[in-house]
Image 1 (cartoon, rainbow, N blue to C red):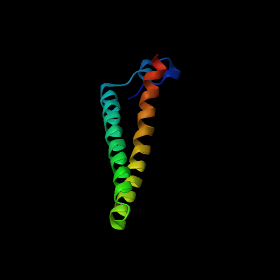
Image 2 (cartoon, rainbow, N blue to C red):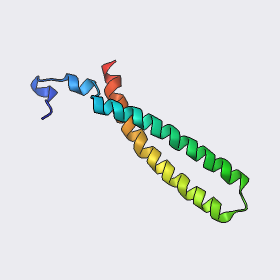
Image 3 (cartoon, rainbow, N blue to C red):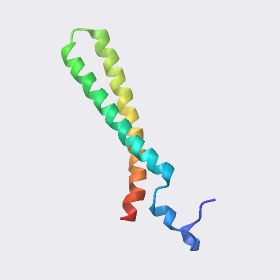
Image 4 (cartoon, rainbow, N blue to C red):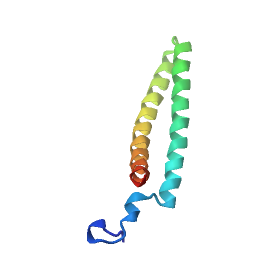
Length: 88
């Protein structure tokens, strides 16, 4: 059961990531880099294959999915980053 800082109990938890959160933080960074790289490759591919409409559509759909994934991962990464930043 988490301790509440308002009642004078262990407030250090609020300022430091757990081991599991640290692993998640590192994993999110790696995942976001891979997604950004994939997105860049898809955009480059679209510039080259501008006459293959099916491929363009598939790439555009994948880019939309990547953007949605990046939004979710970035939100969580920022939450975890704030935990660490509050400690500094």
